[in-house]
Every structure is written in C-alpha cells, then in structure tokens.
Length: 82
Image (cartoon, rainbow, N blue to C red):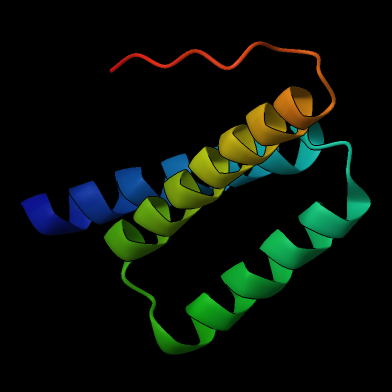
C-alpha cells in the first residue's frame, strides 16, 4: 500500500514537472526532443520513480543548456570555484 502511494505521488509530480518544463522552454526544438525522449523511455520503463528521475535530468539539462548559451553569448561571466 505504501509503495502504491509513493508511485502515485511520483506520477503526479512527474506530470506536473514535465508540464512546467514544456511551458517554460521557449525553444521548440528542445521541447520536441524532450517529448520524444520521454515517450521512448515510457515505452520501455513505466516505473514512476525512474520517470521522475529522468524528467529531473531533463530539467538539469535545460538549466545547463541555458547557462552554456548565456556564457557563450557573453551574457554571463564564467566563475571558477576551485
């Protein structure tokens, strides 16, 4: 019963996060790629925990993509923290 409850929570969180990701990404080519890759994952793995993890990785990828794009355009300084 506890496992089912957690899977329902992860499913709801996955749907919500993916919806926010699709609404927040202005680049159509990235939205299309993320949808394609999520669909491919869902064809072979339906574990809600895995899906949530994958969507989180998509969000992290978009964040890194945005930072790299800003830095290459000169919009942000590169800071070495080491």
